[in-house]
Amino acid sequence: MQSYDFIVVGSGSAGSVVAERLSASGRFSVLVLEAGGTDRRFYVQMPLGYGKTFFDPAVNWNYKTEPDPGLAGNADHWPRGKIIGGSSSINAMVWIRGQREDYDAWAAAGNPGWGYDDLLPLFKAIEHNEAGADEWRGVGGPLHVTDCSRSVHPLTARYLQAAQQAGLPLNPDFNGASQEGVGIYQISTRNGRRMSAARAFLRPAMKRKNVRVETHALATKILFEGSRAVGVEYIRNGRTMTARAGREIVLCAGSVNTPQLLQLSGVGPADLLQSLGIPVVHDNNNVGANLQDHLGINYTFKGKVPTLNQLLRPWWGKLYVGMQYVLLRSGPLSLSMNNAGGFFRTDPALSRPNMQLYFQAFSTVMPKNGERPILTPDPWPGFSIGLSNCRPTSRGSITIRSKNPLDYPKIMPNAYSTDRDVAEMLAAVKFVRRIASMPAMAEIIEEEVLPGPSIASDDDVIQDFRKRSGTVYHPVSTCRMGPDPSTSVVDPRLKVHGLAGLRIVDASIFPDNISGNTNAPAIMTGAKGAAMILEDHS
Image 1 (cartoon, rainbow, N blue to C red):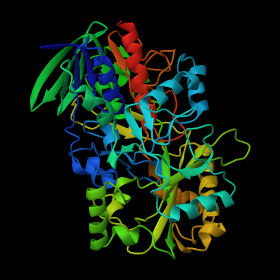
Image 2 (cartoon, rainbow, N blue to C red; image 1 turned 135 degrees about the horizontal axis):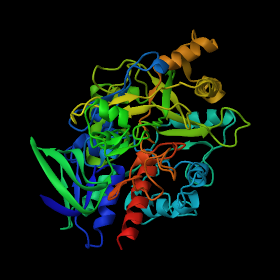
Image 3 (cartoon, rainbow, N blue to C red; image 1 turned 180 degrees about the vertical axis):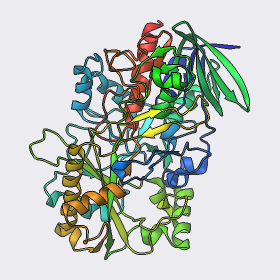
């Protein structure tokens, strides 16, 4: 029996921060259990390499949802990081915090300390922003944020101009005074390499003698003495092993694996657990419930001018950008596929943006089997304008299928299950077409390829976005935070209701989703959670 002060389950966006902060003083011993392996892989470190990791079982859980009526019966592919750094090692690296109102709503729901003004100092302390420090931005932190304004494809300027012609303001910083408008995304990279949570936090912590990281270690059960969590059972190299925590067990396994592990351990809906022969430690119907996610869709156009397709598709282009990356750590391979984007309101009466935009200077209408075709785009000049909803009202669930920890859980997103979400997306895709119709874009568009001009009526547009929409990889809220145990899983200090010695520190605790990409908020949650743990054990 191994014994540590803290056991951290999961080395992802939040877990990497938690491990670093809990070990920094040298007072506490920390064991980190990671189901995946090393992040020292070329396609992980190369920013645009996430096209190769999108289906790679060596670094990716490759989850699949249940067939979803809201998505025309499609079973959506859900990549999640199974690797040191978690999903921050395979994501698109866009660095977005969300809106002030998101966090203020968390605090107003009975979660003191989680308002925007409380969290802004944490966000600033996390980052070293290449654009410099100001009222909202930080420098000197461990996570480098790159200003891509001088590196994006020239077609990006036309997109920004067209969006302004459609009525959106130009916004130089979506994490600044206001989120609304269009602009160039900042990304979590440094010197042309991905800046994952592992690179920023866990790798430095691993140099300390009081930190042990076990890879290929799948946590299978939390061990309890009465209502107190005291240890973790896990499988490594085919052997079942046990580790004991003298102070706390901290679950940082993410919005899929954290509720799965809780349910396997007897914490969750009693009816479900009893039906599977799992002894109930603590009955809580919210474990795995309240699943929220952002849904996205691309509108793709054939251009009259060259796009990245003409560079990334031919062998000589691949050779050129490969040499550019290897020798100079620059060029398309050093960036995200999303050069620019924005936030807008589908109704002017709304008080804040409810939709997010993405601009990609290439197109992938003809995908290869088993590969996200970022590095093999279409043979003609193409580009895409994509969008996703910021605060959908549809709710889904994640539940285990059996008591076998190797069985993947049942993921039911219930996408577009409310009239509001459908109406919102209908208005949003119409606005994408409006951007494309503006002079700056229209003059270089030969045709709309997807969905195509034949998709014109509201009914046809709705049917199309049900068929073609999919996750943009932001699942949250499956162990949501709140003061009331009847509607939440953890309290505002992230302690699991009704149990001792157990906290959850990852995106599953979000009371509601964030208006934007969830990686920066997940990393912030790691910093906030670690600070509270240290306060309680000072």
